[in-house]
Amino acid sequence: MNGDVESLDVEPWVSLLDALRDRLGLTGPKKGCDQGACGACTVLADGLRINSCLALAVQYDGSEITTIEGVSHPLREAFVRHDGFQCGYCTPGQICSAIGMLAEHESGMPSAVTESTHAGPTHAGPTRPEHTRERLTEAEVRERMSGNLCRCGAYNGIVDAIMDVAG
Ligand code: FES
Image (cartoon, rainbow, N blue to C red; front, side, top):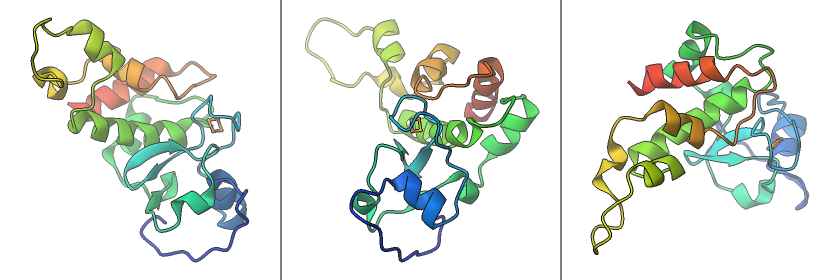
């Protein structure tokens, strides 16, 4: 957990989000919808972004969980620089999600935008187009971050912050 080993006994029905917030006092991940629709609860599990409200804590026994409290990443400052928030409620999830998203892009995982914008040749070819590691476009960032809602509508600042860090 954020670089420390935590030993925690939880009932098998306790969500990862509730375990983090109520048992470990890590209140960075927020409970927005509690049903996988808003992304406010996003954390990183072994570097991958997940909605912690949909995950059972016991599923992640032995995993490295990173919440916003354990994030030291240029995105934190970039969100401030670009006004990537208003009330701030969604921000921990936005930043954790953006970190995971950048890693996904770096690994070559295509987005829906990449697929539709760069439709590959119809003949048999590589299943993963080479363009997937090109610079992220704003449209790709918006699509890849579409699971994180901001009720204040600070999307322009959020995208600017991510584009800034993505280079
Ligand atoms: Fe988990 Fe909304 S609280 S997605």
